[in-house]
Image 1 (cartoon, rainbow, N blue to C red):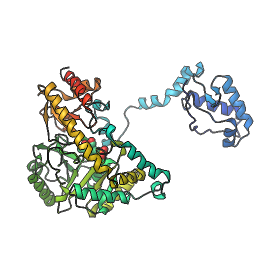
Image 2: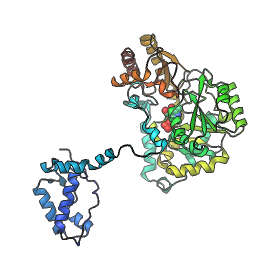
Image 3: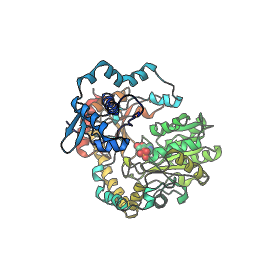
Image 4: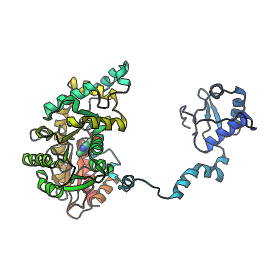
Length: 496
Ligand SMILES: Cc1ncc(COP(=O)(O)O)c(C=O)c1O
């Protein structure tokens, strides 16, 4: 039997005025807790001395209760581990009344049927199962090359701040984020992305998802219209839906979002969400003309532009394209970025560059949400950036991802050229491959998941049914061997 380490006990209520003796009350409590599953087999129970102390009673009733529980097989003693709940509990706990007690709550909930949720909450429960998230193997989206991450350097930097933590590392902190971190972000964005901002405009968030969520909360009221790219990023759509927004899909083509269509369909829109540097998921780059048209439209209508610059660090063929925010002269762009792609998603660090007049509202919204992000990781990442590891890692990963993209495109051409058509710019950590017309991409994705392959269906990025399905294939965390094997399995999944 595997023993469970000491854990917390649920509260023990004893009644000193009851006619039931104290030892019996204790015995009944432990027995019931074991039958109900509140105490698990192998779980350590406190020593008689410490339990008596905790309950402020004499040790004698505790000894009496423990003796009885031992005698009936509910407790077992282990050398060196003290007393534990027995690995197999006596048969009577499998009796119908005991089973009923255990299942009781669940049955009550099921009998009540669907319970009242908000419309937004209910809409979330209707989202389909995402089988492409079942595994972390080949083609999983948004997965960096973990085996190339400088874990040694990173762990030293984290340890540096852990060993003798400054008070500021462990205490409550500013909702806007750790100041040196915000300074490093502002410098990076100004130099590399052409973002025009002051440090006071940088709000650190729990990944860009939270930046989108806070933007939605601050900028939108229920039923407000928000234009989104079609196809577009489902995470952004969910953030806007949770704010009660009404989504208007606007088509994208080779030059990014069709701004003429936006002007027509989004006349009274409060905001537009776009990924101009690397359209998600198709990979197009928004043209300079469209950028200017979009900024003029926003200035004229008073709409907000939410720019998601999620993976602009990785462009392979062409020079990096500066942010839309840098061209904005009316402070209408909310610029969102993330460390999920360059570092790793579980770090949960992102940022939003907020127009100056909105800083107070954004800061208060962050405070109301979850106060602030882990200062420890903000401090470690500040050092990682300041000491040059960040720039070095990006340079290395750019080369690696370029090679992986090439290998994936080559494998598709040679093994699946008749079934998949690659689209999009040479950038980022994923590509889109269109399937033959009439192919159900969700069904292909499900079959691929059964073979251990993650292939996100393109159709989930559409609000309306697409003309043609496809697969979104991540290559950042997929090595050449996995690419070769993954494409073989993908071929089988398309052919059934
Ligand atoms: C378009 C887009 N935005 C943002 C993100 C990153 O989200 P987060 O920073 O919350 O991890 C992703 C990740 O897949 C993405 O594809």
